[in-house]
View 1: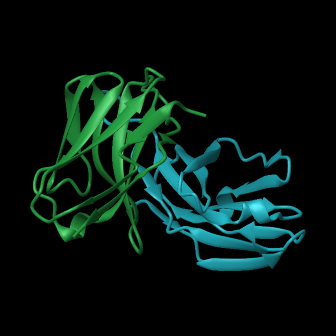
View 2 (view 1 turned 90 degrees about the vertical axis):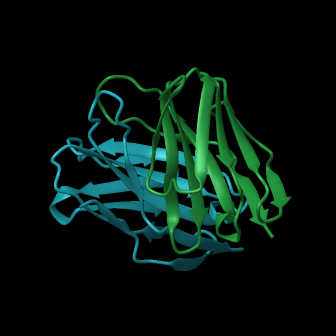
Length: 115
Length: 119
């Protein structure tokens, strides 16, 4: 199994509060991703990172920011949580070699409830 | 545009039956990759298989087999002699070739098929 951990695994918070989710990998993979999974929408990419301090937006990035100060850690921040951000959040990693689509391996997920 | 369709929303089978999960994809690229992931009730996403568009050989791994047919744009997944532990949501996914540079391998996931194996 790919060495990916997410913390916290569960979180309940109130609307308007900031929330930070952490993804940690031990594989030294270049690419890291944050997805959210919602009924009826499947998995949607929020942000991704292609290296330390290198990040870019995915398809549903509004209301989220990310940071990657070390290869192994990728943080997702909800600056001011809203009820629409209640979801299951998955981190994923891939090696980032040149050429050829790579497999993304997923972390265990974080269940976030915004009241 | 890329699209992945899994027409079967939910399937129930009795243990030891064989079951096939359908996946139909759309892409304009000639080079692409297909994936299957399993999401058991515990919630994690487990990678099962990756195939590229140039390799149409069917693959078998234990009780699992995959049938890739470019002519029908399908990548179906069969579980033989199903077991209760196979109960999960299964996702088919499609990704086009790596664009290089800082771009990422955009993966389009299907909506998933929920499989229940009844003892």
